[in-house]
Length: 150
Image 1 (cartoon, rainbow, N blue to C red):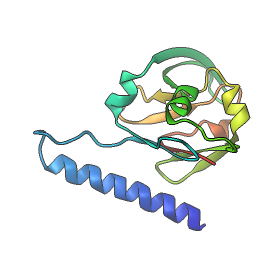
Image 2: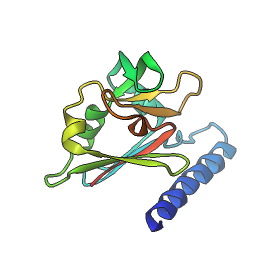
Image 3: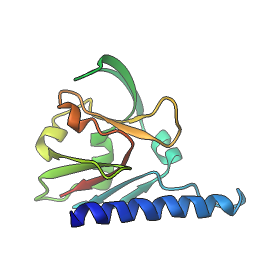
């Protein structure tokens, strides 16, 4: 329960920061952080939408557990984890949505998943979904805002 409150507080602060920064105008205002990678990593990442689009973007067809085959475009989850540098001893990856929902996945399972993506929402820029090839529907986190390695 305390973990959920902490996540909600962080998300609220990020949202408030984005609103405050947008009120400052476009001149020199940095783009808001839309996704973080934190925890047992060598380099914590605070990524903007532009940062993610500047990475190697792929489109793959995946079988969603409830929706069937669908094309997803985004960045490979393993590319993000490699960029952050997962530390020795880490065993879990937690994907957290903007509403506080989270899914824990075994790091080894994630590392074995070549087509697991942080996919771009086709309708809203700056919104991401976890497209988790071969995983249960709970792992397909919508409106993904943070990835925590433990």
